Length: 146
Image (tube, rainbow, N blue to C red; front, side):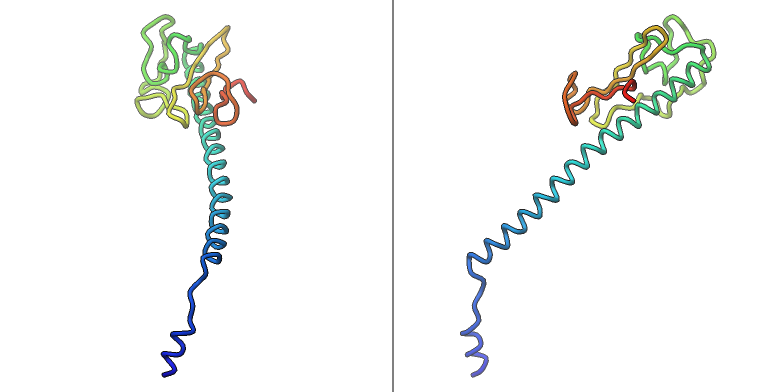
């Protein structure tokens, strides 16, 4: 008899209580998602800057062996495959200057741009939007930025 009485008195949550709990959970998820998305953007920028640093080191080693940087036309491909256009490197390192058979891409999968002017090079990532300019994740990242 006591079991029947207890069963009759038990009630579930009201719709209002359920709605309040769902609103609280939604708010927490929004805060967490914002932090995660922001962290992912920062991680992509840091990864791209690290890739640029790797390319800079490889270019410096190329110059150390060959007394000049690859031309703009030879591009970063010169770090993985010996250029055949002028000026041909005379002391090209066997196996190239980067591990693997390809030039790395930026964190968004885009190719780096390479320019050589008067002995000074610049390596550029166009950012998440793959277009010149932009802000935040879409901003260009250059080896000239210090």
